[in-house]
Image 1 (cartoon, rainbow, N blue to C red):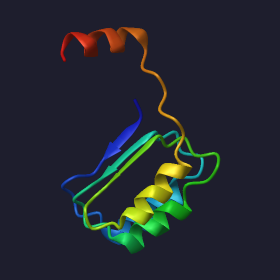
Image 2: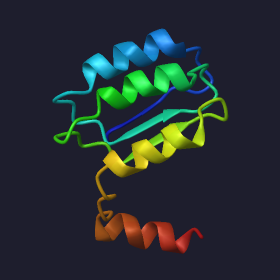
Image 3: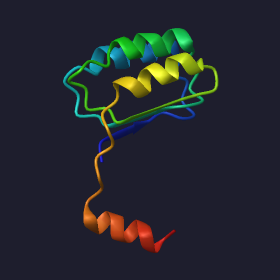
Image 4: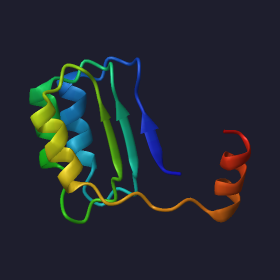
Length: 95
């Protein structure tokens, strides 16, 4: 899985802008930015970097980001890909 998780790193709005610049053409599918100092302003910058060709399926944002911005992300993300059958079988055993 192509994922990037930042917690508890201090990514902030400046880091969100750098990530937004790196998103076009990126194979990244999951981006975890909760508790990293990203505010609504940084999230909006990141949202601008999520184009129609984006492969992102999940963006986790912290409590400092307004719900309206989080909903805007949900509208732009791709539907989550189904896991490989072997991964699904393992996950079901450990529930």
